[in-house]
Image 1 (cartoon, rainbow, N blue to C red):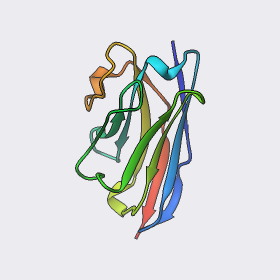
Image 2 (cartoon, helix red, strand yellow):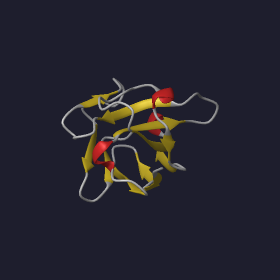
Image 3 (cartoon, helix red, strand yellow):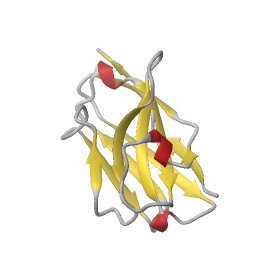
Length: 125
């Protein structure tokens, strides 16, 4: 079993940047595909970005493409989400997720077995 802990959230002005980290323990992430999802108040969880086990393949939601970058450092057992050009619509709790049943990245919540506790990102206008 893998435990995930997100960090790096906070309050930022529109146009600013934040870098989220997701540190794993219990298992090495080298065999896990990873995803970032977010959930705004009153809304269902939304896919943000995903990366395959090796870090060589990524997927992005259209709403964050060209602004967010997901990366994976298997040596540090950590996944990152670099977020640039933030806008108020990016405000949400951001969760990282992991799964080892498949290696390719996935946009689907139900395809991830392990979840972190989330970190709040608030973008002010």
